[in-house]
Amino acid sequence: MQLLFLKDFYALMEKHLQATVTDHFPQEAWKRLDEPEMIDRPNLNQYVMVRVLKDTTLRKGSEEARHLEAGSNLIVNYGEIRGFLESGAVQLIM
Image (cartoon, rainbow, N blue to C red; front, side):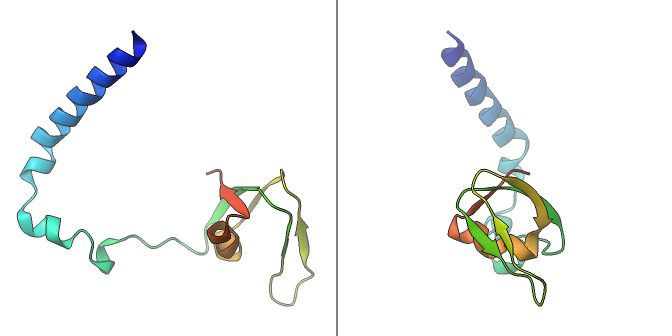
């Protein structure tokens, strides 16, 4: 019962958003959506909360290396952890 309700609700929302938003986009706007300047870049100086999925070591410049233990959560600068996100060693929580 709930699944049917959610499917119907989703279909109504999709139809509503198409009628009120996407149907009014000019064709030129659709063509530009994949251009590099239209894609947001992450703020490398922003702090994020991550969950460590694999034991790893964080090295930051001349500072002492920090061991990151799988299962732990931490708040860290995005620029410092970016490579670990891409490799799957950590996961963004927020």
